[in-house]
Image (tube, rainbow, N blue to C red; front, side):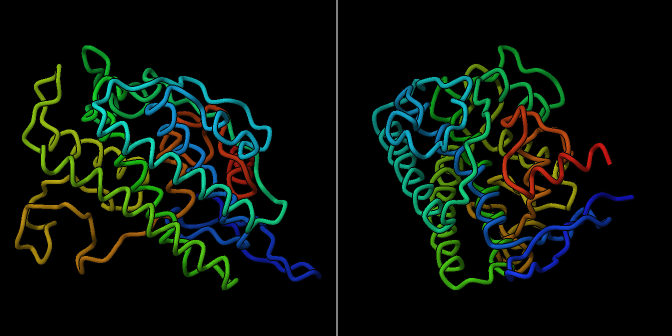
Length: 307
């Protein structure tokens, strides 16, 4: 058995609900608009806390306590050692996502998920993601809050994963207003990702202190890790790539990652869970989500572990 497929069934009220059968691990998860929007809120909660904590040392709760919907505070909130320009940009991104969470909550009309328990500690990020990328612990341990370069490495792959999730949801959103919201969220998330990739490309030959590893190599290794975890082919790419992966096979520059036709990739919810859990398994929480993501899609995958 390759896993769990969430197929459609329709209730008497017309709402799409989820049912269980076996599925191909890369096939899109199908659910209602609300299910998809709830699932994406998990990633926006993660981004909001990662940005606001690293920029200000404060949780998103300090700026709008209602958004967490009584979910637990994040673990590992820490103010980053950033220059003023980078700090201002990250704070701006955090405030942007507060607005996105509010807009999504409004669209869900009372079906908002509580914020899941998030672990954004430097220890968890080093253990679950960076050490896995290099297949060994770095010495000293990687710290995303130590400097802008380290922070941008992590922020890049989270915003990119969020962008691909939204892009993959577009064909499955039925309500016009919900589709408009997803399109607007995608534009903003892809824009944020481009800021991080642009920075990483401009500094691609810079060595990340205190390691003798360039930013280009960091983006290559983290992309390879994400692809291994997601188990659905090459969709994440470093900022410098072989010509075989460059646009029209004519360039090694890869500021915007894209497919063979330079179109944006997509990711399914199960791919995203394999990545953000750091486990490579959509049924096994960990990484940023030690107790798992919230909402019907994530909960159904967790329950499938015991089926």
